[in-house]
Length: 40
Image (cartoon, rainbow, N blue to C red):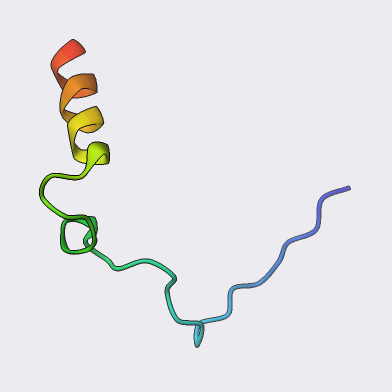
């Protein structure tokens, strides 16, 4: 049986809202995103 867990509205976020602010411009994750987008 599943139980609903309520949200804590006062909790801070763990990551920034915009990951572009968090990752450096030459980060490997950006390269991987570009490659996967180009495949679709």
